[in-house]
Amino acid sequence: MMVCAVAAFAMAVPALAWPIAPENAGKVLTNAGSEEVEVTWLGDDVARVDAKQGEYYYSVRLMNCDESKMCNSAMFFATFTMSGSPDLAMYEQTNLYNDSYPFGRAFILPSGDGESYGIGVDYGLDLQNEHNFDAEDLKMFEDILTSYAAHMSEEN
Image (cartoon, rainbow, N blue to C red; front, side, top):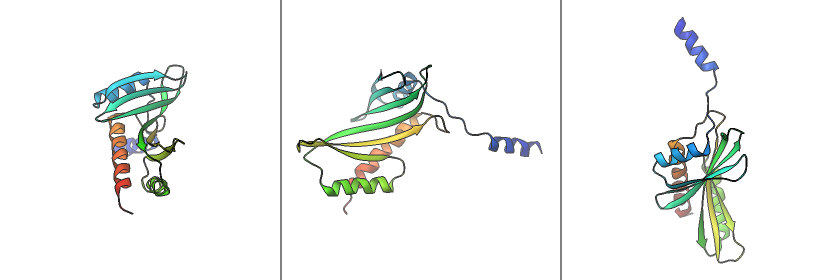
């Protein structure tokens, strides 16, 4: 009987998530193998953590920070500069990726000069509803980057 009561209570209590301070997010990234980790406050409620993982640089934007500097949401993102100008097929492939892969999002940023353009990939987290910021998030972001690169290299 006691086991049933404990199980019922456990099912009724929502999973807890913990907001994170940007400095602690930086420590998580460093412990997960990232280098050149640097925290910059962009305002009272937004901070950015810049880092390098392997051969690419990325950032984590921490948002909805309260007066105690604990942040309730995070977004991993990386942007890459490409030569030339994106064609319609690249936009279509990117949209297909966004329709097919539920965790990340990719986008194309035209520069307007026709010489180069940007590609961005991001992954957002809600740290107040059943999610904690940890090394698995960096791994997920790496998987998203890899899946986007693989998707874009597939033949139509």
